[in-house]
Image (cartoon, rainbow, N blue to C red):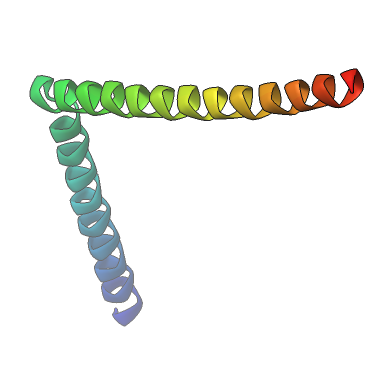
Length: 80
């Protein structure tokens, strides 16, 4: 009798726990996929890409100027 009662309570607990977890997961997914949230995520992504692109361009320009200065110094050293 106690074995059956024990396994019944284990089954009920597991069933309740998994259904609660599943409902919470589904709610979070639905909330994440609302049109407003998708728009916000797209805007944030575009802004971050723009910022990264500007940083990459600045870094490239700095490296270009540094290399150009090195090359000019090399040419000047050779012509003397």
